[in-house]
Amino acid sequence: MPPGQMSLDSHANDSTSWSKGGESKPIESYALIGDCRSAALVGLDGSIDWLCWPRFDSESIFAAILDPDNGGHFSVAPVSASETSRCYRPNSNILTTSFRIPSGGVQLTDLFYAGGSGAAGPSLHPASMLIRRLRGVHGTVRMRLSYQPRPGYGAKPPRFSRAGPRSLLFSIKGGSVHLAANFNLELDGVGEASFTITEGQELDFVLSFNEPDVTVFPPMGRLDELIQATDVYWQGWASRIRYSGPHAASVVRSALALKLLTYSPSGAIIAAPTTSLPEKVGASYNWDYRYCWLRDASYTVNAFFGLGLAEEATAFLHWLLHATRLTHPRLKVVYDVFGRSNLRESELPHLKGYGESRPVRIGNAAGNQDQLDVYGEVMNAAAICRDRGVPLDGEERSFLKGIASFVLGHWTEPDDGIWETRDGPKQFVHSKLLCWLALEKAIELCDDNSLGLDPLRMKAAANEIRSQIEARGWNDDLQSYTGHFDSDEIDASVLTMPILGFEEATTDRFRSTMDRIRSELTQGELVFRHRGDETRGEGAFLFCSFWLVQCLVLQGKVDEAHAMFDALVGRGNDVGLFAEEVDTTSGQFLGNFPQAFTHIGLINAALALQAAGSSAGGRP
Figure 1 (cartoon, helix red, strand yellow):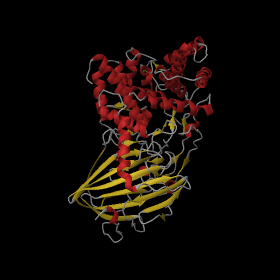
Figure 2 (tube, one colour):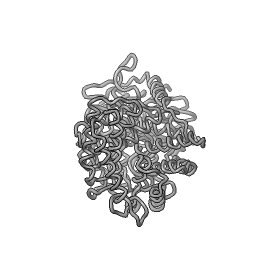
Figure 3 (cartoon, helix red, strand yellow):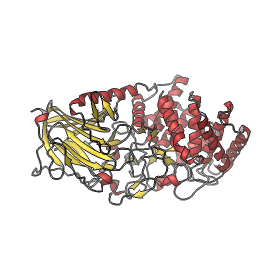
Figure 4 (tube, helix red, strand yellow):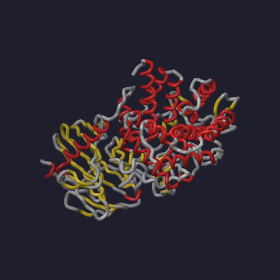
């Protein structure tokens, strides 16, 4: 029977009725799809368990990852247990999941249309479209559809209206959501139905978002064209990547993930598309990462330029300089995709939390912290771009002058540090290091009189910061740099010293520091941020592990760096994505997912290995 003549039959009396309730799925069981405005997490079981519309930081309509019973989901999967595998199409963000049971096999393709809003050939289309195509591969498979949207972070079920036998509509804050199919949708009273699909059949679902007072139906007859256009777009974007080092497929996948985390209208890159995935399951270390952290700036710009993606690097820099103007000369830690910094933190007590990890938070109080490292990050990002030929206009130079002046006046102050501790300001070594970097890069920009500052005054301040780090950031008893002045706390953030040019990786002091970090904070290839992470039961922080790879390269230990990088790449999930942290015992992912910082770290470590291989004739 052709798909257009097929109806879903109610399974209300079906003894195999499927329930969504249960424990949270492993974070690593998810994959990401998106359109550079919003994103969805798709489970290995074919369930969309997270989606916020119309932006990354909008209210969710599916949040089963945070509450399997009440958060909402959209699932398409076989009724009976199946063997499941999945992959992205090569050099693309189109996801394919294959289900196999004894009687047959089906393939589920998930994607967001990459064309954006507006005209698509002869017809209009919605502002955002999530396409799900189910194809019968062989035999016959009994399937189950469960459509359970819960807008407003799972606050309540929506009120549906019909737009014909093949579509359902409901309103959300900021617009409306429309589910359309190429067959009649006959869901039972709880939003579920079962059906049979046979070899050669294709059943299509399109979930779309429209702006208020606008209802544009998806062009169901042109989905082949839209899917193909999306694949062409992603492959064309990936073809711009220039990389010939180790694990090229993982590097390209990381770049594609970063592109999905980019808000295309502004060029901002969010830290992760999720909120409140815990750093320790069952604990309260649950934060909202759907925003943009300035601390990522120079690492992101370096990664994009290193891969030949100058357009993305430049767009991110311009977002940085635009977003921070509203608070200039003081920089906030975190901004939303439009550059707003008022990210009031609140809790959602009606959601159970991932693995009973409460509270679920939206917004982020880190926006009210003082972190002096962000000034160095922004200044370094601007210097990297300038060195790559990106011109700085007069307003941008004035902005950077303000940053340098602020550092000159405030570098002696304590702050909350890169790890955003909530136990009071300290004199963090990493923060002082980035203040030093801000002034050194400002001095470089003064070479062409870009900033109009006195380079001698900045050099004197930079030298004083260096003296303070070397005196008060060094612990003679431990023979190591520490996390903050006059302490005995080992911290992985000092691994950035040679990466940022403060100290050669081969000095006695840094070798001793690195040995101490590997002794106290490292398990195999995994590195904790500081001892507090391990004692509190948090996971190892993957970005720190990639820092260690770079330090090994800088020490000339290239084979050891390759071995560590190989092991770290192997920590990715089945589609090459990474969370913020890894449990060192179970290997399970912890923290928000996928994490931009981790993927940036992977790319920069790979670039370091590529450069070492090129210069030394080593392995690619």
